[in-house]
Length: 338
Image (cartoon, rainbow, N blue to C red; front, side, top):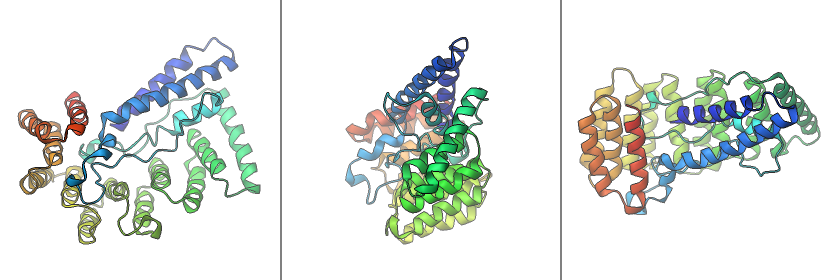
């Protein structure tokens, strides 16, 4: 899950900086740059472990792009090149802790992270460098307020400084200039980090209804709205949106049921409803591996390992050949948590 990836990123950063405590500040920046490179490699290795790789699922398994097959469409942290400065690297590393990728959709949403892990204390040298950099970008933005690169880097810098109130309007402006799922996710994540769950849900709702997202919005926006409402405790409203997605043909039948189960899985006292809804997917779409895999993960999380193992075996047996490695990775991840 995101938490594990964030922890890995934080660990790499801590190790790199602690190893250079006795060195000069320039050496520290070089170490931070290496941490950024390690973080990028870690993210590349991390993505295939989750459902981000399922974008290649054959068309016969879906009508629209599925929330259970959609790849994450990037994050605030750009990959960059080897010529990036140390401060730029640390900004990408730490800002990326918020937007490290799509939450594993098969994991019940009450078991996933909806806000960034608190950042460890940074050295005063690094904080000073980031603060100076954001001042320069703010000055530059006064003369070129629609420069998307400067908006993005300034916002990332504020995130590193944990000044979410300053980052939010920059990301909102970026979303206005360049509407995209990426920019929606980034703005919503900052609101989550600031504890403004209702605002995060509003960002997704507006995106789903926006002209730029089309008659069939990205499945990531649909999932984002449902997760944001769940995090805010508005489960009834969340279910009503799932129903509307079905009525408007925004999601296929499997996705609608899995989204419904996702709501129940995060709603205390509705575990049986979640399990029953996962079973509905299997009963109605027995040829689709997603139902078996989703219920298997859920059963594993609620302490039914034998049932989970049987479901996992079935998912493996009917998954398309090019999805088998992904299915195995999801199963491995689910089993490692217990």
